[in-house]
Amino acid sequence: MRIAEPRRAELELRQRGLVAALVAGADPPPDMDAERIRVQAAALIRKRDRIVARTHPELAAALGPEFGPVFHDYVTSQPGPRPGCAAEDAREFARYLLRSAPARDRDVRRAARRVARTWPRGRVTRGRGQPGSEPMAAAKAAGSSTHGKWAT
Image 1 (spheres, one colour):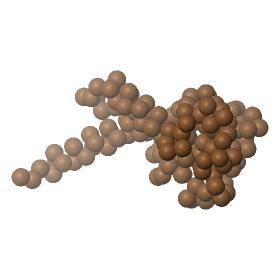
Image 2: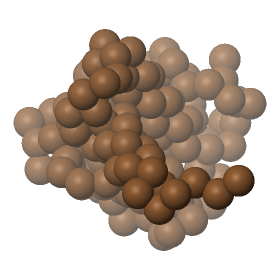
Image 3: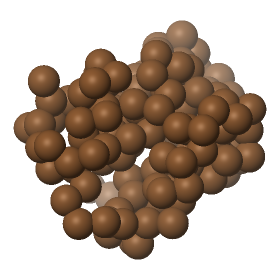
Image 4: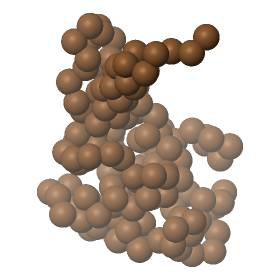
């Protein structure tokens, strides 16, 4: 059975509204539970920050316990859709740090510059992200909450 075109268009609008509320900070569709959408949107932001912390532990180490709140500020201050991949999200976050107050700290500036200039694959130097490498050791020393196969 085929959905009539007007119903299909209405469904498409509702789906776009839900996605915009979840990832772009738009108001939720009127007939949906706004609190549930807010909770899920916050979970998606935390998922993004964990991915950035895992792929670029030097940022997490440099920011320490401020990483989560600063990443949340970055996400909620950016208009439009999020970057297309985790590497681009990390580069945009690094650029955000270089433009914002937390970047006044030397270690944050250094880590942000390093991430902002990474190639599309996220590699800037040989060995980054490997056990014992400088950024990974720094993240572990700072007690970073990164998860993954090299987490402590």
